[in-house]
Image 1 (cartoon, rainbow, N blue to C red):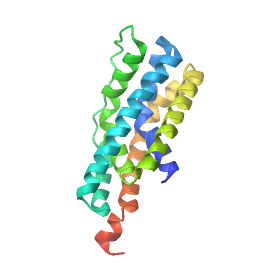
Image 2 (tube, rainbow, N blue to C red):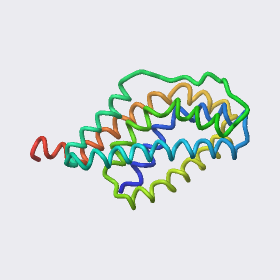
Image 3 (cartoon, one colour):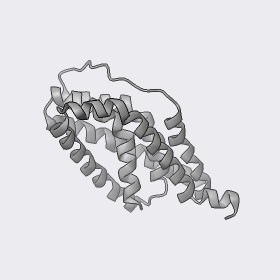
Length: 186
């Protein structure tokens, strides 16, 4: 299990949502935002893992390497979701629904190939790791979210950075699954 890949994947699939987190943190208590965000993350990574395990029952690991196409497709396909700013008075539910609406496609397509190769015990270690990453991310965003420079950098570079990371994750899946070695008999 590669913790760095999980960290980079977490950052990549959530980069766009970090901007939305800035908006949510300006409106709601940090505790409520963290809870909604974590629930959404757990739902999406669990679905990704279970779909990967189901596919793994029927396909050899190197064939699952083709799943690396998903994050590369997400990087090249320009379908940016926008947060409309409409919220209700339930901050945990608002954060959860917003996260699922904005990040489901990215999370499922990018985490699926990464989590497919994990054992159940490795996945159970991944969940608290991602929860800790989420808490740290929310706290950092809360602390630096009001800085004008941070807002400008996120607006200017977050999309290109996300695309580069998605492509890198896709290429890593090709390599890690032995797809490249199998196809080219290296």
